[in-house]
Image 1 (cartoon, rainbow, N blue to C red):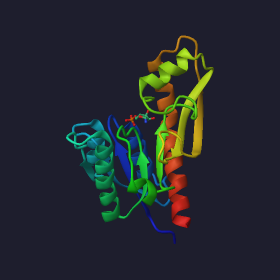
Image 2 (cartoon, helix red, strand yellow):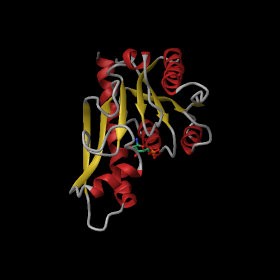
Image 3 (tube, helix red, strand yellow):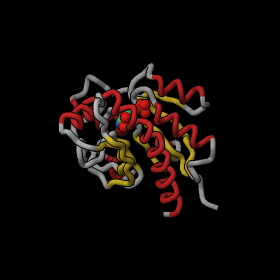
Image 4 (cartoon, rainbow, N blue to C red):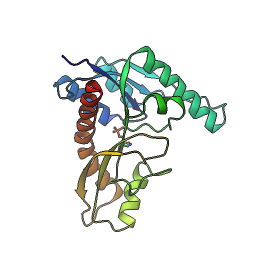
Length: 205
Ligand code: GRF
């Protein structure tokens, strides 16, 4: 009998990917994984409401804006790490989390943090590549296809080993919004597959 892997989902916004994970958990599709909590870096986001509606513990840890950027990242990351230790979190899923994790959490959770990015990495990733900017850059480059990537998190931005990708075509007349919507649908599948895969790996390790 494998142990349950507690999953913490980090969010900053709407949380449709968190919802996909919650739904998958309720249907038993995460295998040994279980959504243990959702954590947002800002109050009032709909992702928190989604967690509460599903009886998933929801908490907010906001960056301390009085600190300079590097120390601010470190401080927030350390508070997230403390929560992970206290709650026996086995896997951290970044699902639209806009803060950057740094320091001990990256080392302590090496191989146990995954991120979802709305492009086919390594294309259209890195600092500043988030939200509609990614899709606009894909359109501006005339790419025939785009998609999403689930990857392991390392100390870089969108640079960790790729776990899985799902592809979509770029269609004539696409705007950043229509492309984003097509990719979002695939993200909801990819994030569930990625979380289940990682939970199984972690349980077996
Ligand atoms: C997704 O497009 C994800 O790839 C990106 O942020 C977005 C989050 O969407 N990192 P949602 O909050 O899960 O709806």
